[in-house]
Image (cartoon, rainbow, N blue to C red; front, side):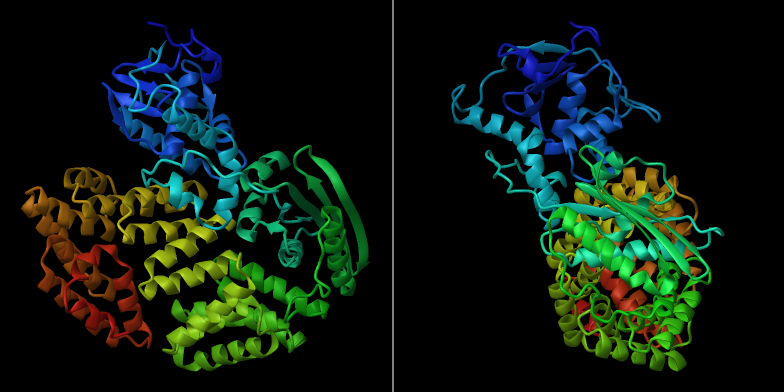
Length: 638
């Protein structure tokens, strides 16, 4: 038996006589493209098989995370969370609970750390050696390691790739992957640096970059990475090559802004990421009122360098040519996106200032509508006295920027709250038609589809949003929630795992959700262990009230249930309904749903009762109620 580290090289170097890797009771059969345990195939997803092969070929030595991501995912933009989930899949298959087979070296990488030996072919499968089966396996390996990666990039843009392969369907990829066509040019617009003397113009430098991103997003045939992903590298010391790999783009636009008094200097440069070569650059120093000319010239320079064509009219529907209105609008966008304490109020004030400076600024009216809508739904603003302002903002945006995607999304939200679902869907259909690759629009449409019971459509739309905006934690979380609701728990786990690297603050919540999935799967012993590791709170008690009961720890289950019953708000009643639904006490579950609804009707917020129903529909813990004849009439109450 060969000791770790003594055999080096790759599959291609082994020759025809070496077609297997053996370690312990496992065999990785390269001809069959399978992992075997004592001759019985162990199912692995394609990416898990590819990662295991890569680590096994390099057994005994450290392999960095970056090496694995480059080798297996290539140019597809994924996070380390994807690799983490694949390793969980592999370790589960190998029963490597102590992580002694694949050892993690903190902050460095991984080592395949058990003795390995190579061998000749294992017993052939049903087909003759060299026959159709061998051809299919060879093609399958090519689809994982070679040209299939390029196909994956194209399919990911349409939200098809993850469901078909990497997210745990267990299906084998087709023997022959179709050849991808010529790759369309792609670009990420990074946040511009603020070089102003006081360092207080980040909102303007970010906003200018975002305006350029929006201009370029309207260019046919140009893939433009969404703001959330491209702006995620702000204030990070990350080189262009790394950014390009993570976002899967061929070009990066970066720049800086220096604003002082009424003067502004903007520098921009377009970098071709393959060789980090500069394709185009420009420096502009003008009066602030000429900022629109600067935007136009930069966009034209980039388009010319990429050999694509800008629209005849560079300003999007509902824009402005009033510099001060733009400045207020950019400040409003900055506060709305940051969403810190008091930021929603600041956003409303800035958007109001923008429409006062230019009453015809439709996009600013749409921004104001969004800021008021969020404040109303989160109860930051009283309902009755602020609904008229919300309605006015929506109507002005529709009049001035009727085709602007955010306008249509805000109009859809207003129609939904007003009890006009058909009108809401019509607005969203228009928004998707005008901005088919806008992740915000796709996310809103996915939420509406989910609430309407069109679950597969919600998953499809949310996958597209993730593909276009791969570093947006919210989009991945929503996708995971929809997958969990569909009972596709392995896929949901994978998506939840990808949220944490993007938003570490969500780790505790994700752990709670994953523990509740174990409850839903009736894996009660595992659920108890996971739930007991959580901090005290509702997530923990919901799960323990079910899991303790299932494993016979009745007194502890009663204590968890009592803690939930101590709550007097709407959420506490819904949580009790969830517990009883999971316990199979259907009548009791409906009784607590009615209690939640009664509490909502007593709430001064007029939308509280709708929120109760929406939250119940969104809860996969209440799925045992769906086949009861009382469920449909109860959900119709909204």
